[in-house]
Length: 285
Image (tube, rainbow, N blue to C red; front, side, top):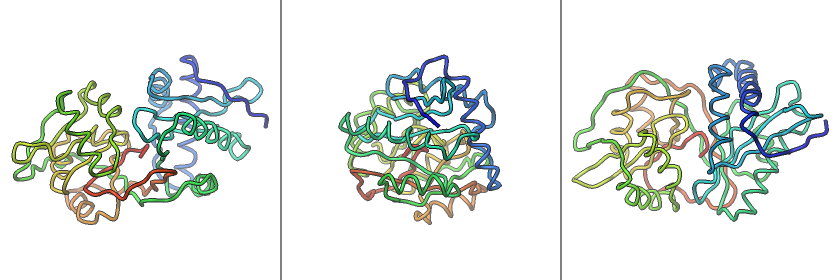
């Protein structure tokens, strides 16, 4: 296959969404897992939002003028994030995926990001092999958790909607825990009304851009994370993601009726610090 890469256009969203839906559905159902996107329409909406967002770099793969895949790079933060990357199931393993990955990794290097990260579905052996070949290191095993809202307050912790005035404190907290901030991503979540903060003793001790598949959370302690999870009305998408080595948090979630939908792998190239606090990654990192 002769792959030609180009930037995405708004008109690509419908075809790109259909490919994303079918690609995720095929690999997930082959391993008896639910697909990440419940419909082609929802996948198209996600693709459209990414193509239209100035904080994302988009690249589309074509073969003989036909779209066969796409990839995205989140450029809103000091660390870039890859995905979603999808290739038409009819032409997978023919080089399009490698070309799409090479394109966003080259972009990340050219833009001078301190590192690049992604989250990989653990059941997808081929993608794990590709990312390892490309130089990514496996950093964390993750669990995607889903279920009904737990509606569990945590004594001493108060959760509220985040505002723009909270951004500086949240960025400082993220930098203490991870060694870098995610302010661009958090700003978007605040603008959508999706972000929240938890306070203890009158100060911010944790925040979330959404307890969801596409959201991340950072906190000083597990109590702060539990308060954010306990205050969430639902967990949009396939669920929210937690590091499995945080056994205390995972057991707390399981004891409240949440279930593990799948396991995943956080992978990185470049800057990576062992987190010095409690955290939940997004499906990007």
